[in-house]
Structure formats: C-alpha cells, structure tokens
Length: 285
Ligand code: PMP
Image (cartoon, rainbow, N blue to C red; front, side, top):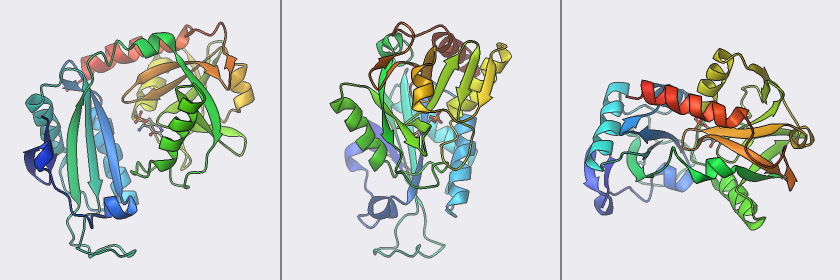
C-alpha cells in the first residue's frame, strides 16, 4: 500500500481524508503538478515548483508550503514508496470552509495539499516511444486560461477517450484552425532541420518539458520556430512529436489516419528524447 501526503501528514492511502466540501472536489478549484522520477531522483523539480507558484498566484490561492519543504515531501514519498521510475503527483486546492458557495472562502481558509506517487517501471525505456503515437484532431473547447495548470481535466479526458475509440493514442486540439496542444502534452512538427511549435500564450500550458527540450534543441544547432501550425501542415511534416513531464519526448507517427514520413519515429524526436533523458538524469535531484 502506498504512503501518501495530506496536509502535513504521511498516511497509508486508505487513511487519507479530504472534506466533501473541498473546492477541488466541488469546483475543480485546484492546481497540480506531475514530476517524473528516474533512478529514484526528481526530474526538473525546480521547473515544476516555479510553475506551481505561478498557477497559485494567477488564481489568488495561498501557497501552503515552501519550495524547500515541497522538495523534502517529494523526496520522502519517493523514499517511503521505493520509487525508482515513476511519478510524483501534487495537488493544491482552495480547501474548504465547510459549505458550498461560488464565492471563494475566507482568505484564512487553509488550502488542501495532497501528494502521491505512481510507480512506473520502464518509464524511460518505453515501448510506446519506440513505436510512436497515433493522434486524431479534435476541436479545442477548453477555457481561456490553459496556462494555469488546473485540475479541470474533463475535456482532455474525453479527448483521450475519443482517440481510444478511433484506435489511436491521443488527440491534438485545434482552435481557429491551429493546433493548440495535445490532451496532456505540447505538440511539435518537424520540417527538415526545423522544429515548429506554438508560441507560449494563455492558450496552452507552458510545458516544463517544452522549455527544456527547446533549450537542448537550440544547443544542438536545430532551428526552432515558435508559431502556429495547422493539422494540414502537420500531416505534411517530416515528423511530429509531443513533450510532457511524464512521457518526455514522444514521437507522433500518424495524424488523422495520415502517416508521417514512413510511419515510424523519425530522426529528430528520438534524438531529442535521448538528449533530454541524458541531460535531465544528470541534473536530477
Ligand atoms: N499541455 C497540457 C494540456 C498538459 O496537460 C501537459 C502535461 N501536464 C503539458 C502540456 C506538458 O507539460 P509538462 O511538460 O510540464 O508536463
């Protein structure tokens, strides 16, 4: 049984309790982060801690824990649950003042903080990454502040189910004709030596993996163009891929039934995956 962390306590998962009035439960009034663990160490913890602060600030939510203490809780959960490869999930909600109301509770209401681990042996050496993912395109009907990492994940979940029904792995969302992002990842296409991905805005999540991968790409003399692209342009690309903290760099080999290149992961995405994993393992804490 897992040990989880709830509001300052380490508990067996079956003994962890949250109020039914918690705003996370009633209103999806909460934010989250997912940090990968490789070799028992945290990948890009700093990046996640910085984005967490930003999400909380944007929602005028109190941060209940310092960065140092948060790191300590992550490490302790990894240790207690003997995670070698896996994930640490963190969620902070606006808490509960014991009733349901649209208005935010009194400012002194304590946020709820929950962390748990997921054991994922073979996370880095994933067979899915060797095969590449098939994606479908769907309309992006999410709210306008996708840069805040909230727990409102109903539409992304529905998108994954639509992909599954179509015999695919994931969905890329499209707004005003342009790809925003994947259901749980940032989206890229490759043309020659050029990597093309949508620029940062309120329309997409500012991926922690995106920042690192673009940095490594530029350091490897690849050209990076941050601009919008359409599904039609993507179908004609040499390659495509996604990035996320939990799947790293994932080649995309098919979009809406159209194979990219020869339908196998290309040259750029697998190389970026390798560089990313090497560099991030070295910097893990
Ligand atoms: N976009 C969305 C919608 C996501 O849910 C995620 C994963 N949380 C990402 C992008 C990738 O972000 P990161 O690299 O920080 O995991």
